Length: 211
Image (cartoon, rainbow, N blue to C red; front, side, top):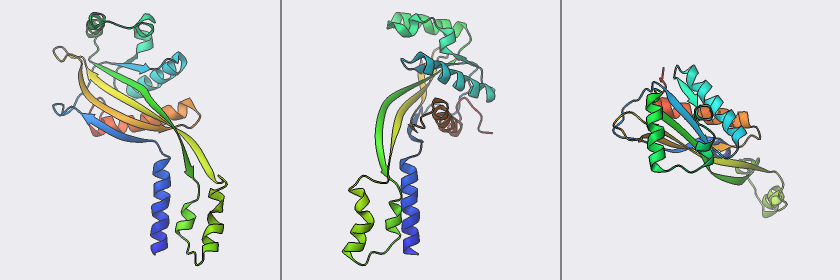
């Protein structure tokens, strides 16, 4: 039984270390719930192709939740992202958004990237009894040879939901940090991100319904 518990613990640790997840999140304590009439989705990345794919997928997912959403790449001129904006220009943009019926902005960006290595099948040793030094060393010597290792990349993302309702002055409603384990496929990575994002929004009664 002891060996079985160690085995289950080790497997759980390996899975948790290599899976996408919500790392931390913050919700404005004054906001109980929030439903937007129209959301602007902004992906912050210098890669315009990735931004186009990302915003399109997020908008499509929001529309499936009966939330009106628009890609920023369709709403703004290219000069908005290619040039720095002054506070006065941002205030003018906010007025444009209000006039266009928007009352929320969803920002998403990659804030970091980490290359990690996990030792595959190392949990096998936890479930075994080694009666001698030779047994233990022989079963683990592959670690010296860098065998049975798996490398993977983790992207650290930050997503922020702002209200641009009149009188709110771009108030932050929610922010979440999501780790996405790279699957070497943009669409698959976005799917992982969206699953975690929508769970976080539903749990906090923001934008999308929990039903």
